[in-house]
Length: 605
Image (cartoon, rainbow, N blue to C red; front, side, top):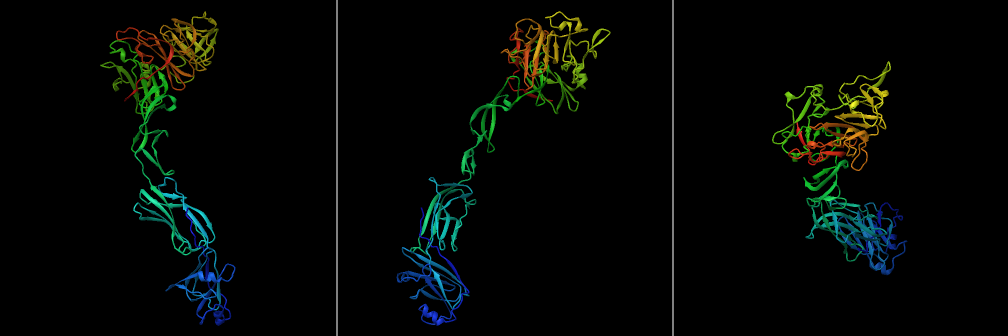
């Protein structure tokens, strides 16, 4: 704590006072001054309230005159008067001791010489100041805020001198932060002291209060505090100006440089293993490895959802096309251990239409691909001379396995328009469907199939016959899409669930049944018995023996597969047969999520 006896003085400008009828001799007598006073300014000192000074006070009173050309101590008369020369000057008067008094006068050249100027001595003010110094010292970057504390301030502060400065380790003054010789009655301290141009390092902050006028010794009261100026940190740290400290550089606001952790990928589609690395001075979250939830497609650094499916390929949200399995046959296939081949086809512009082996881009350019068997089977783009020039040509060459949800033949992209009509007592479907369509979906959501793929659970009702089609009466609600492949038929109902019937030799019905045939529409369920829901599209492929593999796309972009797994068609990492062609893991009777064990490798056009 700093406590000093501080000078509080009153400032008096002596100018323009009234005369006492120019009776200078009388004034001289009243002040007990010998000699003429016409060219003198007479000043008389008194106690507060104008009370005459006592003999003891008069003996202790010291007066210092600071004129233009001289500085001297003055001797007072027995009446506590002094005669001062006319002109600008400053006069300080004080009585030291247990009850100190003081005055501070400022004279100008117009001070009257025909009167006695009475000046009342006043008790000095009290100023106690200190530094707010933490136990371990101060740590700052660009400014020192709220550093000085005024613990006590009473009376007038005239006469105090306050100085705040920085000193280096050699005790050399580096910078004056604040200096004030208080000539008025108040002290205003700034709330912040600028140290932006001070070099980083260790310093000492010193606060000194000088009371040379009131204190006989003229000693300074000092308060000190250690200061560290810091603006830079280690490479793996950031400087925090708010706390003037170095904090670790963090990834995800939690992990320091060098840390490794596991976290969910974006959109909760998988899980990644991350490391926080220092890249160009910044903490960067780096993906080391990741796994995707079943049904999503693993890219280099994310898990992609499918927008559409066709055959054993999917159009991804990145506008790449991912394909899996081979679905071509076993001849010349180099190894069953390398099953589940997955490749992503990249294109130079946005995909407009998509099929199992081709896409049409916004520019109407057609790109197609196929599996090529050499040392390793792989997908490759067809050479330009073999690529169809139009989408219609791609359809005719059966490069586009994109079944119409209404008929299972040609994709129209529009609403189902088939209607049951009657003329002269004969039912028919209009407009006339393609003769090869096994099943149809009409405007009401009813499903019509030819006799060969109708459910066997009921005798066919001729009243709902529109040759060669019969209405499937065993569905609980209307359908959104129908897909018939070989002798297995599946539909998407309006609630997003799937029902299938027919040949179940390789599990194509997906009802978790070991029966080789489903005589009535059966709910497609997962391994836990829960029905498949939120399905927006179904498609299928045939293996070399004519058995189907069915695929379904959900609203969240996941792909399900069930049925034949020859050549790895269900894409779950297990081969459908060994190197000699013997069946292995070839029948999946419930839908499973297509899995991408390794990242799909982009194949650029």
